[in-house]
Image (cartoon, rainbow, N blue to C red; front, top):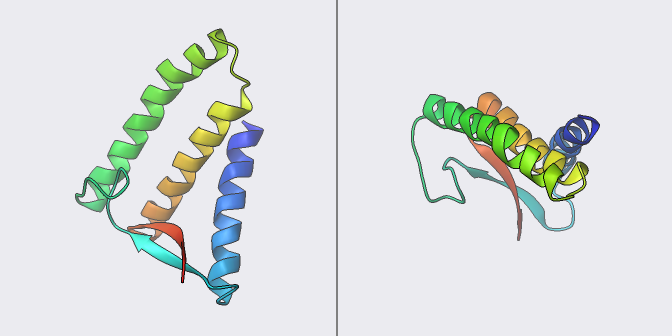
Length: 101
């Protein structure tokens, strides 16, 4: 759980830092789509999709990862990243990504 919280805080914090001023040629790009830009849809549908993916990941992938000996912080980072994207999509309707200029 601590890894998930850390990942969300780190994600949101770095985006705030980068957005406060153009630093080192890094800018925030907005991605309104889902799954690496392959799928689109309305914001509520994408939010529900993210929640569904998180639920399946927690129910299927996390227990499987533990059975094969993957350290618990690795699935925690994946879940934290998905949660951070859920926060972005809920707040802004898009997911914020870093882009170099």
